[in-house]
Image 1 (cartoon, each protein chain N blue to C red):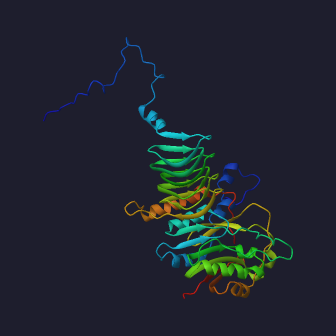
Image 2 (tube, each protein chain N blue to C red):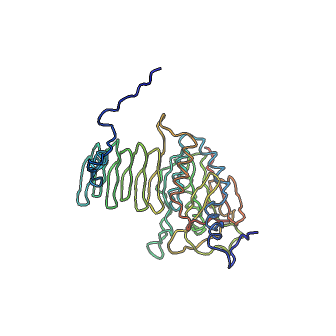
Image 3 (cartoon, rainbow over the protein chains, first blue to last red):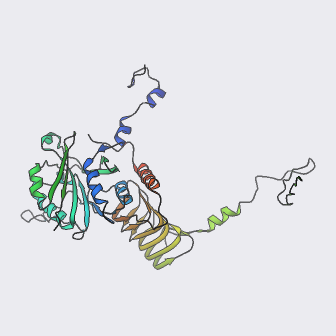
Length: 213
Length: 176
């Protein structure tokens, strides 16, 4: 009987046929919230989707092939510091027009914003969303504070409607913040929480929507 | 029933060399006419060339220089080479970006942005492929013209192939 791991006396040919960790990683992870919002969004005629996470060409092409017009406007992090020590920091501004998007993919960006700046992002998201539009955010869950080690915001690659993979971009690591669910709800108001899905990896998929009228 | 054997014309008959006939030298065969035609149909705009205005053509075009204005090669392929710097509206059958483009790109067939490519503008084409490492700011619209649309399975295939192209096996990591 062949063992599923390599022993000292395994031949190279045998070990080459063994499944590797990389091939499992390529399959990605489930993202049911993405499937749910896509199912709603792609019903619209020529839906507009905006990805403000680190740019991934495959994600943009995937969504465009689902019939959407996909815009890419990465929110650059870290946010610019205040011009002087006592001056207020420049507000978060998204360059996109008002009321245009049916879906905004923010991926993990919220985890890299200090709690005090979350409302600024919420106002901007509310401004650019069309009535009934959705925002998808993936954020560390409250119980995972230990896991909030600094790192770069990951680049999300959509593999299927309900599957994503991610990879860390190169560059200096950034501080991560764990926001309680109620802080997200308050901070991103007037957007309303549509659903929260907690993954086994202690990441929350949070979908929010802009109410009609 | 009569059997009719068609006689091949003289030019198509196989030439079997007789022992007395010297064998023709095969290594000096002239290049095929098709190959010559392909080479003629590609036009290069060199690195030192700067063009301002509208550039139109009926041949495949490779640009290594600078163009500022508008490029129209509607039924042909346009390649922006690694040294190409384009600030223009672009319309071609196929557009391959290895250099830099600032402006909207429209292609009747496909747009490819290579890992070293950079596009700032809107891309409109039935098929789009963006490699890892490419820079892009703008929007992608893959609206297909009626009658030229691929069937649903083909669309899925084209997406998966685009992903397969750009997924670095060792770099991607799944969570959870």
